[in-house]
Length: 236
Length: 244
Picture 1 (cartoon, one colour):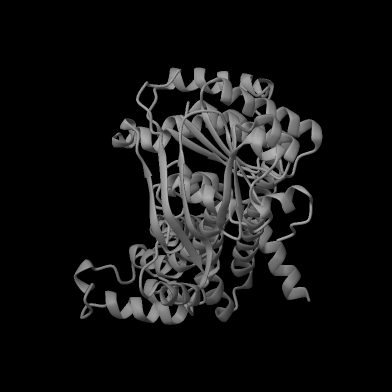
Picture 2: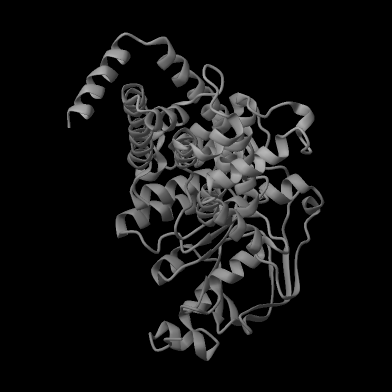
């Protein structure tokens, strides 16, 4: 028990003193995962909207694949992105292996299907409600996409948060692609993993507390958003 | 209030609509001319809503032809915005009351000032001007339907299709909606509407189309229809004996 207590106190001290190593790790984590969430949303949302609104052969199969990809194992994604980015791989010339850019690529692969699958469901539900009115006004399904995205913005932002939550908490992909290099590609999750195995529990604990706080805040934000949207648009 | 060129007449020829292997509309032909409201009556499942959707262009007929034959039908813009439809359960955007009216005006490409003016005029007309900033979806059922009518009215259509606009409203709200519909008529808008409220049909109708089992059994001037319908199905319907 005392180990937990000691490291907890040490952790609080590090946070209180704004330990520079701690801060740089947190900053990198946020930078990588936020960038990945933005890119993943830019790709995933239109993809989800298209899957919701267009009809083409193989669409059902696409939806199954995208939904299944929500649960991609991070280590496998890490491995594949590693192979792609490695010197002999097709993307080797970019020189992104063991860099934050490579980590972003790996997280984009993890996030995009999550945002796409959730967006598809949200847009499909909204379209089934709006369809007749939109068609009556002469809008095609694709022409209605901006309207659907705007009117579904509260729900869609929860999809983005879900993607970001997945990225910030994930360790398997970025530890393979990033290599957990101190001061360069070390994030909260990879540091926790390393420090725990090395026995330096205070840094691990401090990072764990920050990570938990972020995770809880994201969930709180998502809940608040959907509550706001329900309060604003309740009825009917 | 509208351009003199008109979309009407609307010609429906031998239209069939099939779904799930059943003919839900079979061999319907009719012509809609400008004039007093045309009311589509018939029991549940007769195909009234389908017929309105086919005429409005929301559904494609499985066979037959629906065509606007007026001179304005050549103009894509008029074809798109010269007709509007209001549904039994109004579809309101997750936006404010006035934003719901502004939405189609923007699609129509009107400039900001005109949009605002027309939207406010439309809201005033249906008595919702005081609620312009409220979220549309917290309105009561009657207010929602009035908002849907304001949205249609703001486009200044030549013809409106109303699918049981008062079906789920209490008598007071229904009367307000009926008053707005009467306003459409005074403006020279052709109203085509379905209803289950025979009193309302009597008050509004110029002529009646009676639909039964996906077929038109008769089309008669309203006064004659309510005095003595020609088809047996309509007689039974008015006597409350026709269930389906």
